[in-house]
Length: 285
Image (cartoon, rainbow, N blue to C red; front, side, top):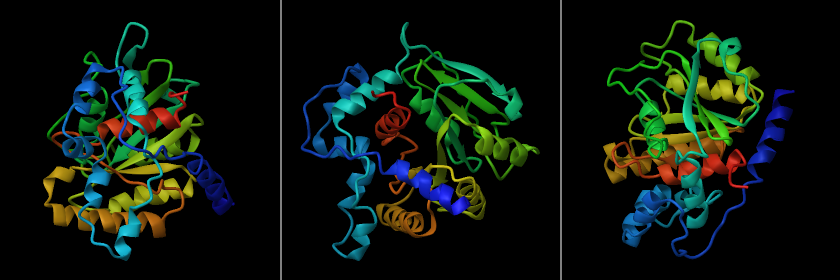
């Protein structure tokens, strides 16, 4: 039964068609993203498409096939539209809704939902803050100490979707972490995608494997985000990317085949991630 559900969920991944083509002109309605598009092409690729930028370091052998499939490669026009969705305006309110320690305390919403989960100190809250950089009134608390997030925090992005910041697992995780997160992942009907953050400098840990097994068991469509890609040398990072991509390709059924690398300092890759979230929640329609 579980395997059948996984196959059904995987069919949804294939609905995301790549938007391939030459580098387009600037179409963005977001002034901030328009500034990004004025960067030199090499730097632009690194900021917007970090996985594509890494491909140039691959030697021409069989390993290249691990990341050569571009399942999600949107145009700059689509990325610009997604930027507008994440920008707070009078007509597009982006706000913190509430926190909850149990599913029955969570806000009851019909709009699509995405959640972010990962090991303590993986950079989850920092990434969410970067996603909301165009909504300065939204407070996303960041701490240098692991385990700062103790509850499920719900943020509403206009009429489009809800984003949920989950507590980190591992060091200083809440005592009721398993009950809280397992119930949410298993029973939240409007959950469209789970984003699992993995520290690219560390790789997939035993704790990450538990989270992966949970997503697989519940037949959840999920995506791996590789954080802190600027913390390692190019050679070490590429080795980690290839190992993790191979794991995704051979050891998972519900994980989206494409990785999303994110820089801890410049937050390269955030624009692409915004577009992916907007796409899977139907916000770009």
